[in-house]
Structure formats: structure tokens, C-alpha cells
Image 1 (spheres, rainbow, N blue to C red):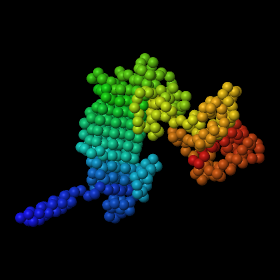
Image 2 (cartoon, rainbow, N blue to C red):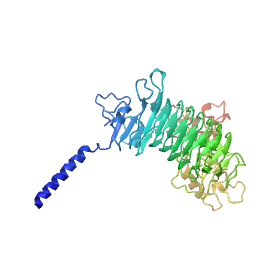
Image 3 (spheres, rainbow, N blue to C red):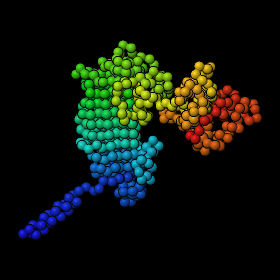
Length: 497
């Protein structure tokens, strides 16, 4: 009897195992999409057999899969059905920015391999929505796409969705429209030039909006009616309405380290229907129609001295070049090291991805000043200009004419070889916020990089003046009619770019 029962038990176990294996989904994997694919039997298993249509990949995906999408333009339909849309799959990540030969997601370059999800349909029509997410219980991911040409770029309801590294622009209504109990994360993205609001979040359970640029939208940059809202490290500027509009916020809403500037309406507007206010700190709110409406901030840079609050300052934040849209802080900005000293910033990064706290204390605004002790003039480079400052105080001691304590790195009251060693270690440093591309005016031989051959050209003209035989006007960057140290510093700043 015992033997018989064991046999029966084994048979039941085997039968159950077969049923489980037969009913289980396929092993999670990678599904590839390439608009230029010509595979006659596409299955997404390799780049050679990639799907040409993103809809096919979404139809094949199961929870745990990743969909890798190569550069190109993808539309939800080849016809004129304006209701057609891409629907993210529960637990599946969609990633754009591939060339079409990568073996690792880390190899993609979404900044240069533009992957468009476009709502521009046949007959001059536009999709109502490009991304439609509903009923997702395990986060779906949309990462590395440019979403454009629809009524609403992203629409979600009752879902969990993470949007990252995307550009959501040029939609005729909202960039992102979310409602009805969703949990939403939007990070490291640009939401711009949408006809109405950049982001509209209504009735959500959790909203986290971090490290984004939200600019030049027709009305509000961000409208938020939710619970447990975090808005951190964003640059929100030049929107046609309010920078941030809160409808019925609560005290759990956190607004920290944002730069909210030059919006036509209020910088931050609080509807305050339930007599609550968001917690606002470490923000630059400047140059808006009105900076704060029915809310208070602490440790912030504000334009209106009537907006009282602990640690607030009311002087120009001193941006690098606000007129050109560069809202990084200058070294002399009053916002540097002026944020809440009691805040907890572990693991946070600023709008550029730099560590949130640099130089001892947290800065106010989305930018944490990327500093280097040897960048004496604060231009973002350690180069010949800084070397000339060090040379000007070389061998000086405290109290002597020409003393510059910035160059006394070891604090021994003399600028000597020990300080020079520190300077040499920092030579060639460049701040992360610099985005200057190599230009033909530095790349004399046109090979795409400022290198040794270009240096040779510059040195042939070194110390020459207008009219001399070796004069080369390309090297006279300051138009002073002589090639000198200032010109060399300009050239050196482009070295190896």
C-alpha cells in the first residue's frame, strides 16, 4: 500500500509540474524593434529578426520583458485612425535610443539615436493619444523616446507608469495627462512646447516628478491634484501660465530644490481649497508674474520680500545666462550653500546628475554648483587662466602684496610646490554643466576633434600681431589683434573636444 501511494504521489507531482510548465508564460526576455527591419520572419529575438512595428512587439510582450526600440519614427497606425495608440504592457519596459546592434541596454544613446513616437497620421490627422496606460498594477516603463504630434502625448488612468529620459513636446493639448488613482513617476525628461499644460495630474495617489525640464508650455508647466506628491530638482520656466499649480494640496506634498522662473502666471500657485499648503524649500522662485500665491517657502530665493519664511533670500539668483536659458548658478550666486542645512539629501542629484550637496552645504534651486578648488574664475574649466592666477601669487606668503589665499590649497600660508601639485592634479577639469560642442573655429583641420594638429596651427601664430608674417586671425579669439595668453586659454578650453 505504501509503495502504491508513493507511485500515485509521484504521478500527481509530475502531472502538476507538466500543467505548471505548460501554462506558464514564456521566459522573460528582450524584444527588439527596428523601423528599418526587412526581416521576412520577424520575432524580435535579435536585431536581424527585429519587428518593424512597435505594436507587434507590444502584442508579444509579457511581464518582465524589455522592448528595445532602434532610432526611427514609429506611429500607432499606418492609416488615419486617430484612436490608435501604443499601450504599455503590465511589467514591461519600453526603451528607445538604440542604433540596432547593441547587446546591452547601457550601450544605447537616446540623445543621438532619436526614437520618435509620433501622432502625425495620414491625411493631416493626429492621434488623440500616443501612449495610453490603464489598469497596470506592476510598473510599466517608457524610457528614451520623443513623444510628439498628438492631442495628449501620454494619457494614463488607474495605472502605474514610470516615464524617464523622454522628450514630450509639440502636442496640441497636454504633454502628460494622468488621472484616477494612478501612481506616476516622471524623471530626467523634457516637457516643452505643448499647447496647454506640460503635465496634468488629477486625482492621483502618488506623484513623483524629479529632475525634469518643464518649459515653454502654453499654460501651466505642472498642474497637480494628488496625494503624496514629490516635485524635486526640476527646472520649470517660461510657461504661459503658472509654473506649478496645486489644487487642494496637503502638507505631505514636497516641493524642493526646483528652479521656477519667468513663468507668465505665478511661480507656485496654491488653490488651498482644504486649507493645506505644500512644503516648499530650497527653491528659486524668481521673475514670475507673481512668485508665490497662498503658500510659503523656506530657505528659498524669492523675488518678493513680502513672502516671508525662515532662511529666505531676496536677491538676484545670479544665473549663468538666463536670457539664453542657462539657469546654472554662477560661483558668486547667493544661492550657493544657502539651502536648508538640516535637510536630508542622501542619494539625491541635481538637474545635471551631480551630487546634490557639494561644497559643504546644499544650494538653492535645481542646480548644485559644480565647483573645483582650482577653477579660480568659476568658468567651469581649470586651464591657463587659472594657471596665470596661481603664477601671480607664486612663492608669496600671507600678508605679502599679491597674496591670493585661493591658491594656498594646503593652508600653510605660502603658495609653493605643494599647492602646485594640487593644481596639476586638477588640470583639464571641466564642469558637468558645460555643454559646449567643438566648433570649426577651434578645429582648424576639420577632423572633428581639437587635437595636436590644431595646436600646431595655434603655436605657429603664438605671440604674433596683426600684419606679421605668421599672423593667423582664426586664433585671435578676443579680437585684440595679437595672439596671447587669453587666446590660448580659449583654445585650451576646447582641447580634445
